[in-house]
Length: 72
Image 1 (cartoon, rainbow, N blue to C red):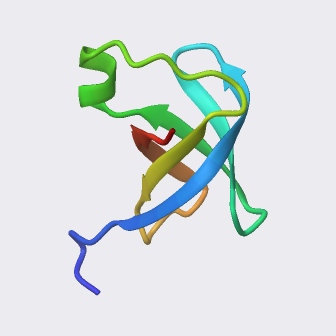
Image 2 (image 1 turned 120 degrees about the horizontal axis):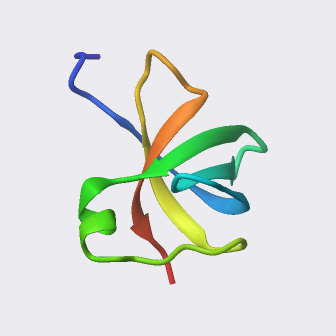
């Protein structure tokens, strides 16, 4: 696995925190702290509790993630 590879997962937002941070529960019952990617912030994509999202995680720190897409 190269250092450029990201782990992509899906989850549900369980808690909205200040500063565009979110607590997301993955499908495997694992909870991570996530922030919004730059493109979502630029396009003013709103996220609420209960929304399904797609995440990118680094293989080095599985407790933090970046939200890259809001699923329907």
